[in-house]
Length: 233
Image (cartoon, rainbow, N blue to C red; front, side, top):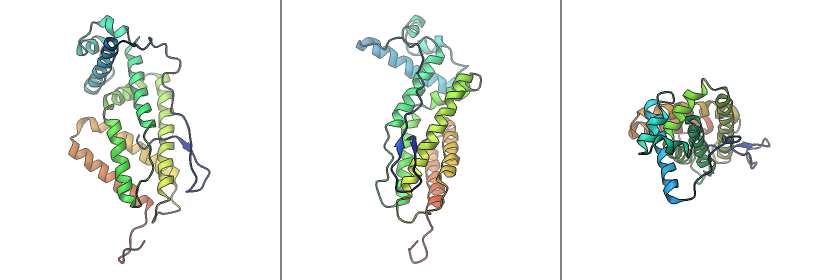
């Protein structure tokens, strides 16, 4: 879910990853041409925000195009000027999420492992939270849409690679466990992060911060050796 930058590693903790492209969710989609005029751009933005809100509140099947247009203060015809279907709107929203996440640079900025892990998680969750509604709808739609299900698998493969890449970088910090299976750990934590994102729709910020702290604790103790009484590892 978070800490995503697709990568393939050469097998050493110090190796630099070769970054792979994020899944192209809009490939093959016959999208209406994106507007250039400010007024039309504003209408399109309102439709996307309305979709995000309603998908979060009512899910994919429970949300209609009429409701999205009404929430955006537009006629239904205004919706079809920008999107050919509710499914296409969902694809656009999820593609925006992946694009924003692909631009996050996840590189350790400090020698302290715990604070580094905490900062990376907080940054990633901050980017994800705006698109909670889209992810809720995406999960639901993928259950009955084979093509979306296939793309969902591609997203998970990409996010797991990103988590693996971050764990590989973390192993360059002092005090790490050098024999950690970063691929297996990344697969487990990636699934955990996705499940947290689903639940984040219904929790307060205080509880979300508790989740980040718990995730930090799990990752830190999986990857770093405990300090001895004398402070050494």
